[in-house]
Image 1: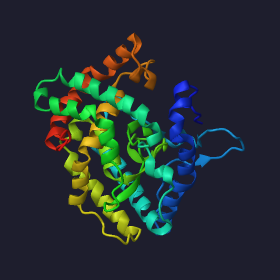
Image 2 (image 1 turned 30 degrees about the horizontal axis):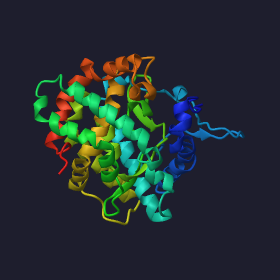
Image 3 (image 1 turned 90 degrees about the vertical axis):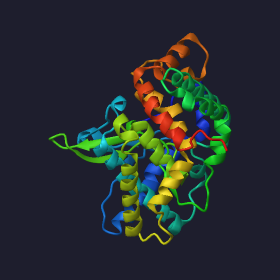
Length: 342
């Protein structure tokens, strides 16, 4: 069972995203609808654990115990290998395909699914977080050989990142859009293994901020935050082809009536969003993913000014692990135009 954080920050700011209300609805209705769509065409698919309702007037999420079924998280600092990445991307493709077909059949998603992370009510908090993260990512980059290539452009983007992010991630009705998981990284994915410890299945959890929009959100966010360093860039194109192949297959299976995006279409939206979801994942999320466990890990320490918060930011932005990822990925993002403001 999950209940809300009992903190002033949650009560004053985080509650604006209605995370528990949205997550409960997503488990109870949206995911089950996706699964039924596949069942109707003869394919049994499970996207997330079963949820349960209690007769109480409280915010909560109650899910089935996946540990009994052989599910567990991976170690977030290690990253996911090709086998795990492909398992997740196939499941994302199935989720995305069903979400696109659902719109054809039932019309638009409720308004809260269009906002997702980009909720204007939470703009001030997001701007504070994003500015802090961009500055600390730049501070980390300055310790990396070759940073002269991209640092100036990266810092300029960081100064206006929140405004640019909200503008560039707005839904384009002319693009192929889906309901994104919204926070698809390794800790929000449960993996199932058999008695020989062979990977069998994966389920999505923590469905708090799903968002309707480009597939670039989930695909970029997942690979930037969760793939192993040797996979993240060097096998990127291979993984995108694998994702697209599964997306196309499941759109066809569900009789999607519109034009199915080509592999080139997917690459185009990924490049166009390198400076939004790519930068966001690398600056805001990956440092926390790779950081060693810490009792000080919370949003308050990320955005406040204190000796404790300074030590926490140094822990997550200046360790060797994050610097290795930054050294590889920042030049790659630069060459994809991620830091260009033109």
